[in-house]
Image (cartoon, rainbow, N blue to C red):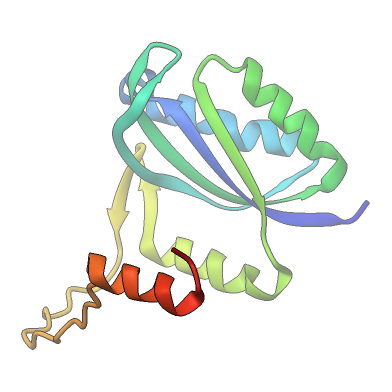
Amino acid sequence: MAANVYEGMFILDANRFGRDPEAISGQIPAMIEKLGGEILVSRLWEERRLAFPIKGQRKGAYWLTYFRLDGGQLTDLQRQCWIADDVLRTLFLKVDPRIVDTLVAHAQSVSTVSHGKAEDKTEDKPAETEDKPVEVAVATAEDADDSKIKSGET
């Protein structure tokens, strides 16, 4: 099979990540490289409260990774993530080859990882002071009734 580029989002145990970010985040490239994959970029996306508890955890550290891996090895990677105690959830998306370079360049330019913390590398830009009007379409109950009459519904 051909090697594809994937975007992997890993939700890591925030408590363990907070105590030892290098070790916890280091597991992800190790799993991918063990299967013959290549890491293109790997970084902390954000730490946040989860919408619902996962494995008893209420907070998670979201780790974003772009990697190249043989399509047949993806199932093995999912299995390794499933049994890893530090990984709460994963999501893998196959990236369209036409946009790989753009996504990887953006992920590299936004931040780098230093001791598990994301450091913003974007330049400070002045905020736009000009407010732009926003058009909002509002439908009323009368509009809904009119559309039913026009379409023949009652």
